[in-house]
Length: 524
Image (cartoon, rainbow, N blue to C red; front, side, top):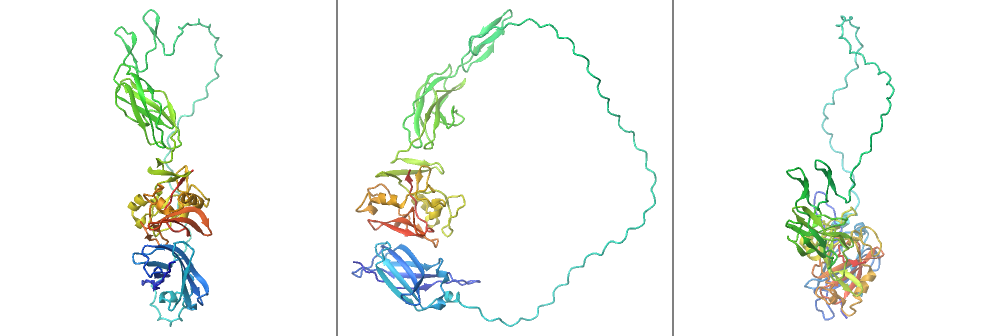
């Protein structure tokens, strides 16, 4: 059985400026020792701090629960206050007592309690509740004000007498010619002439046939080949000339993944001129061309392979092989492919082109890395419902998001809904895990889930110990612990999982929604 010894050190924080205000915070320190009086360094503990009014069993006017880690000297450093409730305490109506409850396992089963009276109250906090001073004496009379603006203009005087009539003006120029009169009535229509004889025209036997006049009769010109053009001889006889399009087929599509597939082509004829480019093209619409997405796979005739990349899982694509010669570009037969997902591989998030590996554990398919979607904001600012996914990076460094993934407040992760298992900020086809799904995951490893889930563990889950963004805007515990949200609420808090660098277990605990934790997604 471990016992916990506390050394209480209260430091009241205040700031001095032109407009001094109390920050309503206190620092709290505790040294943690075991039953052999040995320090417990780097150890996860759960704590609950209460401020009691009137007596050691009085009413709690403020409470805070948290999970924290001792430092290398067995010392715990936390801040009390800085949130709703603490700033409303009237320190003039004491006495007040501080009550510290501790769970040595890092949970909320508090087995150790210590109560101490606050024997003095920081001046800044006490003065926030003090009354106003009396009214000071009347000051001296101020200097005489500046002269006022000039008054408005007076009213306009009466109208003067009418002047004498002026001289007659010059005669105007002659007016324009009048409009032409209306046209007279039309005469009667003449009689219809006799119908001419019906003409004759030679009927064709194939689409694309042409007729030309050879000087004495109409002659049929047979259909040319695709890519050829008409040319007149020196005797003005039209003939088809030039190379034709290449002849080819599209190779069957294989090796389909969530983002790629394999195909190719087989060019059986170059049409009389060299094939200068070949490959495959694809689109989400029928009849794709080289004006859209395509590969380039060399020159010449024969078979060739081609890799199709950049596909989106669940979307149907149309694929054709192509070959270009001097006559133009010819296309093979059209095929279709719909990229599929197989757990254990990787996929690309189409929103930002980031790639994620996956792992199948039991019947669940989990992301193998922490989600890293969104625009980084500084840790001192709360994430907002503004149509943009926002994230924190540990210590406000983009490089930490690249290594550990983003940190998200619960509402931002949920995209401001409260439905358990919602998609939230996960990619299409994925959802956020519920508390029950986390339990299903850890139940696969009943003896040592923490060891199995950590990086290098037997599960392949690769839990990154990304630390957390706390409500004070600071970053804590990177490489010491990983904090992972669930979608399940408990009262006004939310269940989460904590994986510690020094523990073989996984802690299930609850926390307020304003903290910044890591996010893993589960495939639908």
